Image 1 (cartoon, helix red, strand yellow):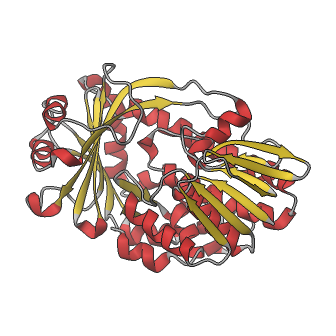
Image 2 (cartoon, rainbow, N blue to C red):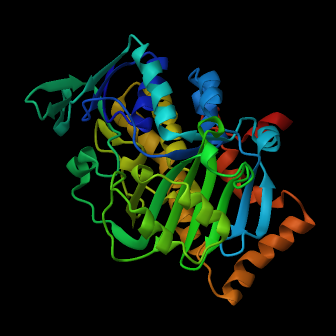
Length: 407
């Protein structure tokens, strides 16, 4: 069976590898003339790591990744720790796979290298899918250069502005959240050695929050700062930011955040407006389906966008392998994935409000119980994340790792 994939981002490349691993022939169409990935840091939790390991990328992932020791919540104005949940070996023992911080470009590179080595995968760069036709003969895509390609099925892995999604369900109208996100990569050598802890750290604050963690084996610190603003509504990763504006947005924050921003490079500063989308009612029509951000784009507040696309890829390849018929396989894939991804979308939406507390009463009501729980039972706050990290999409029964270990 020949499968067409629109988009060579993390989701599209992972899908191609998973499909090839099942014996399918795959053609990927990527609009960019060169294969590369923009962006900064990603968090790959155990649920994503398991899939990459199954695809033979465990060693490569370990070489590019950074293993955080804990997930920590701090007050942005004082830096005070509210709680710190262990990760590292503790998370590995709990979930059976490592939790990594990676540079998006590094992960994309190892996926692309694996794709280039597969005789079953054909990658076409500078090939933009502008339309498709699904009929009894299969699916045919039309490219902007006037050429066409045909296969038995089409997967839209072409991101938040998906042409395939629009072709299936029409134009989408996302809602601006009132939040603007800054991103900045800071070389570790430019900051004091003890400035940023080796944790996945969320810094909460009034009308905003920040996230810091190491990528590229500790060579870089990834900073993401989210501020409630309505004067910028451009949804794009490559919009240049202004460090002086970033400084103003985080002026009330603690000295650690100030020092990190001051060490940043103007050329590595970007900002983008955050738009929210409700879960789609359907992902699939006939021999065409969607994957990753094309069907469940989510706010970045659960750090699961990449992992959900990676899980999608494995699930989709598995159903196609088992059912053989793309129509039936795509329906089964959607049924399996939509409830889980929708739940993650809603959790990310909730975190946007949970992290933005300025008044003392709001801080005490939200963070007080977290602080107390962590003090009384260390590690207890890992439990609310079990439904995400413990899920094993590669298991035939979909059971959790913890249950499998017991059995």
